[in-house]
Amino acid sequence: MAAVYPAATPVIDRSHEPLACRYSRIRETSVSICSPLEIEDYVVQSMPDASPAKWHLAHTSWFFEQFLLRPLLPGYQPFQAGFEVLFNSYYQAVGPMHLRPERGLLTRPTVKEVLAYRQHIDEHMLKLLDSRSDDDDQFEPLVTLGMNHEQQHQELMFTDIKHLLSKNPLLPAYTRKPQPATEVRTSEPLQFLTFEGGIREIGATGKHFCFDNETPRHRTLVEPYALGDRLMTNGEYLEFIRDGGYRRAEFWLSDGWSTVTQESWTRPFYWTPSLDAEFTLRGLQPLDAAAPVHHLSYYEADAFARWANARLPTEAEWELAAESLPVRGNLLKSDMLKPLPAGDQPGLKQMFGDVWEWTASPYVAYPGYRPVKGALGEYNGKFMCSQLVLRGGSCVTPADHVRATYRNFFYPQARWQFMGVRLARDL
Image (tube, rainbow, N blue to C red; front, top):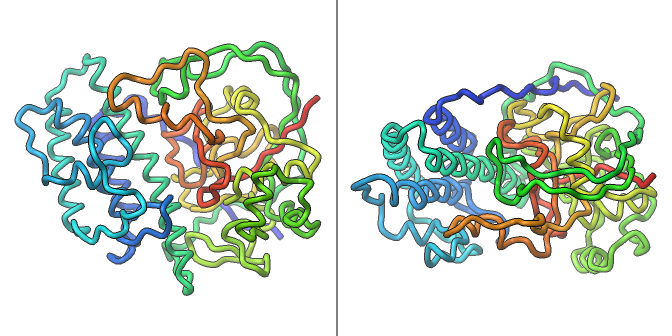
């Protein structure tokens, strides 16, 4: 049955937005994400991989204080002693940090104090932004890194809040705001689109902002391949389950099968045992068979692909298919807060937004990669082990944060992010 959904949200061109305006906009977005929360929701940590909303608000402020205000604003006085430890995430070069699994034990500072901390940082950051020259070619990239760092945490705030609320037997909704509705969409039968192989280039050119793990641009050999024209759906994944997918070891990697048996997985993360409903940011809702399946681990995505006589794409295949496409889709701006059916437009669909797409590529350095010097060199490089790359963004990714070269990465057993499947095949 067709459902009603909004049209794909176009990305607003912010290339000429003043740096201070963009800074303020992004900082305000983080606070607005928390506006539906009750005060108790800010503090609790539902698992070691997730962080309380209060911690996200403070850590993103810590980032600007640590890497911009302390070294660059003359006479700057930190907001409060001890915050440099409480809200350091993983920067060993900066100093000690509070244990990640114990962030939910921090009843103090209070939410009120953390919001005051944010205001303190914003007041001083705007002073710093006003004092710097427009032609400072080192300052603006550092501010832009801080803003993109905050946008990463905005997505984590949504997924961590969703996980937290899902642990409540009442299954409370994050928001009761009505869902936007402007367009009817279904998912048409899957088609595979073919792409030429050859020696090709991938990676960021360096002309615009990117994270260091997107560089350097380099050559890679790609064999001819085919890519599914849309994401795989809940209905298609339900067929995998009903065919014994979680009980048949032949579809699973060894580590995946061990995880399935140890964790007693039988369905996607937020599906109900009856397989007809799922927990969403708007509470428990009927399962939409035409919408992309999501909250899958790499192991589940890979097993489904094998069951479907296909495979997961490599990150090079994904990037080459996406590089000429506009960044357009069901991203945070749409306010749907969940993945949507693909619709019937021709060509590749859902390459940006809806769900992060697992690739078969390990998260490793590109040839010639060098992390930046200093503490910021810990941002990406030290995580290049035992994780897999995802591409494309999700329904809670800010639209001006993602691009074709963007490399997200998670451990293969992770499920609480908006992660899904696009199939690929050899030609």
